[in-house]
Length: 407
Image 1 (cartoon, rainbow, N blue to C red):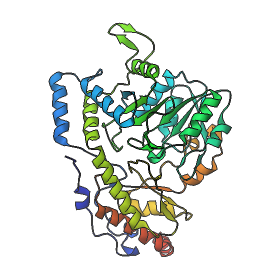
Image 2: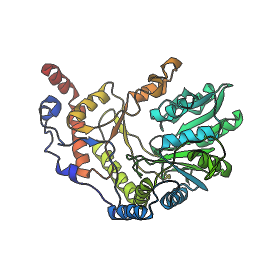
Image 3: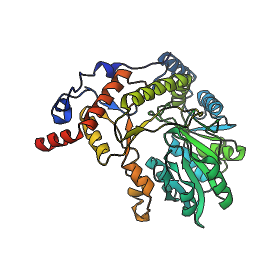
Image 4: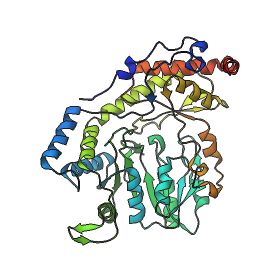
C-alpha cells in the first residue's frame, strides 16, 4: 500500500488573507515546517522492511545480490531495454559510461542541467562543451549542438529535462554523421516516453536516477540502460573494479555498485510507481487550475500522447523580476521553491573560462520556478501555495511599496 504523509498539511496555518498578512511583511508563515520541492515518496513500508530483513537474514548486503538483480530486471522492463546495470548513483552511471565508451577530449552537453552532468565528465578529465536549448521543452537545440562540435568531440549527452525527451532522432542523426557517441541523461525520465516508446533504449545508453527526490527512489542510486550487450558487459565490469572472477581483473574499474538496502527501497518504490505518478498528475492538474489566468505565468505542459511521470511542476514567469520576487515571498512562507537550473552550468566554476554565449539558456534561467509536488503534500497545500502566488503577483506594485517602506 502506498504510504503518503499528511503531516505538512496538518502544520499548515490559515495563510495570508491580504498582502499585509504575508510572512515577508511580518505575518505568520503559511506553513510551520519547510515545504520542499521534492521529498521522498515512500511505498509500502511493510514490504520495504520485509526486503531489508531478508537481506539481513541472507547476510548479503552488497556485491550483486538478489535484490539488485531483481531491481535491474524491473527497471529494464519499465525502460523497455535488454540490459540494466544498477549503480550507486546516476553520476556514477555517467562516469562508467564515459569510461566504457572511451570518451576523450570534448563532450557536448546542455548548460541547462544539474551540475552533476558536467562534473561527471570533468572528474574524468573530459571537457564539457555547452550547447544551447530551445523551447518549449528546455532540451538541447540540435542546431547549437552542430555548432559546438569540433575535431575533439567524442560524444553528445542529451538531457531529458523534467522528463520531457530531447529531440532524440535529430541527435542520433548528428552523432552518426560525426561518428560521436550519444548518451542520454534520463535522470528525470523514468516511465516517460518518446514517440510512444519508453525512454531508456536510445543512443548508446541512457542513465536513470533513483535519488531520494526522484519519482521512484532507492534512497540513492542510478541505472545504466542499453540494448548494446558489449557496452553493458563493459559497464558491469567497471562497476566492480574490473573483476571477472574472484581473482581475475579484466581492466580498470571502480566501486560504483548499488547495495542491497538501496535495491530494497528501489523495488518498493517501483511497486508503487503508478500510484506515485497518479499523485503527481493530480497535483499538476490542481496547480494548473489554481494558477490559470495569472499574467506572465504559465506551467510548462507535456507532449500529448506520450507517457509522463509529472514529477516536476515547472512555471515559466515572463514578467521581469517577478520570479525572484515570488521566491522571496514563498520562502518566507516556508514554501522552498527552486530556481532550477539557474544560473546554468556555464556560469559556474570551473566552467566560466569557456565564455559560452547561450541566450536561450540564460533567458530561461531567469524565468523558471519549480514548485513542490509529490506524495508529501495535499491538494489543500497546493491551493494555499497558489493563493500566495496569486496574491503576490496580482498585488505586485503595492507589495513592492510595502517592502520598500519596511526596509
